[in-house]
Amino acid sequence: MSQPTAPQEIPTHVRFVVIGAGVSGLSFAGQLNSSDYCIFEAEEEIGGFCRTIAQDGFVWDYSGHFFHFKHPKIEAELLANMGDQRVLKVDKVSWVRFGEAYVDFPFQKNIHQLPQEDFLDCLHGLVFRDGGDVAPKDFKDMLYRKLGKGIAERFLIPYNTKLYATDLSTLDPDAMGRFFPHADLRDIVGNFKKSDNVSYNAHFTYPEGGAIQYIHALATRVDAARIHTGCRITAIDTANQRATWRRSDGQTGTITFDHVVSSAPFPRLMAMCGIPPQPEVFTANKVLVFNLGFDRKGPPEPHWIYYGDPALSFYRVGFYDNIFGTDRMSIYVEIGLREDDPVDDAIIADFKAKVLADLVKVGLIDDHELLSSVALVLDPAYVHITRDSQREVARLRSNLAVGGIHSVGRYGAWTYCSIEDNIVESRELASRFNAVGRG
Image 1 (cartoon, helix red, strand yellow):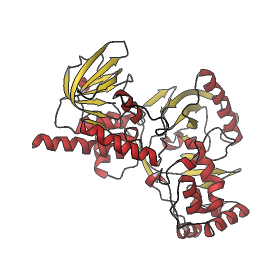
Image 2 (image 1 turned 90 degrees about the vertical axis):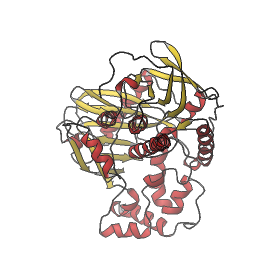
Image 3 (image 1 turned 135 degrees about the horizontal axis):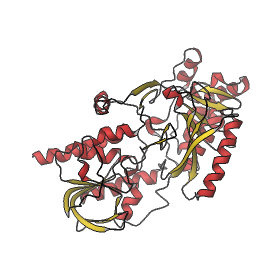
Image 4 (image 1 turned 30 degrees about the vertical axis):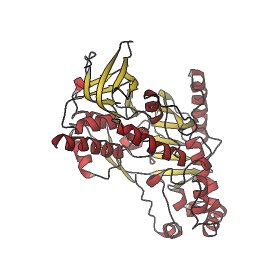
């Protein structure tokens, strides 16, 4: 698919208004047995957060987007639509920084790699944890009850507090769902002798041209003339099934519809539909990402490293060069921020200086020369999944669907899921419409 080079005329009516030309929107439109749709993308290019930057010989994503497939048919289809793009299949190597050393991820299964005193404290806390069989009341309580004080306080609580930029006791016990690396006493002790660090993302694929190649593969199933970039939906009149759009050049108009399929963050969709906001219910963090390219290698092995130390600015560093096998260090550095934290050029400059100093402190760089850098803000990044948010999302999505408004995707469902999950969900929705059409 080639993107339109000039703004396309927007019709006055379509069956489907699709909000967002990211993974979910493209997956939905590409599965439809109909060409009666328009995709509205506020950015000037498709991809959402799954975009890629090529600069000064470095290839970076908006942040680390590595695909972990559970459905071989989906993986095969996407790879087949990438042309001659080289796609690497990688066995993940990930570490946790603890003190001045590293242990394998996940931390809770590798406490035997800790210094003896820390190991004994973690093991004692695991064996004699309080209320391990009692249902936890929140995410922090789950960490204590499932894994004990030593493991929780040495890494899991400080790390996840940095990640989510919030009090973990406000989050649902299952806030990370299947993505949290649970382990029981048998798993942990068994790992002392025979390493078994398999997790949902133990293996991943990554195209040489970055994550945008997956977007391009999805877009091969979509009519490029029906994608309107630099054009956002600003309001949805649910009673009259009419949406108002606005181009980045200021042009405005309206389009009537039978259905809206939106992957916009759920609170933004609510605002479009005139639903009163609930800022106390729908909260999230934002993530400041620095993509950095240096003149020579850093550590040759890990694909990413987790940092729980509150004194360090970042919670994770990922290494593109260790995926590609290149001779210059190319990394992404992630910093979790509260949703109301200000971010301007001066603040970004201050964070960059702090990041570079912290990279020296943890030994990733010394006299390396920084050749290229890009700073990005993902907002929202990780949503705060609480009992209230889950209840309200379910209620409001159901009410909106009755009126033909369907909210999909990670942010549309205000949840934590994989990119592949978004593909599956969006295609299933399209298939239901296809079935109705056949009927």
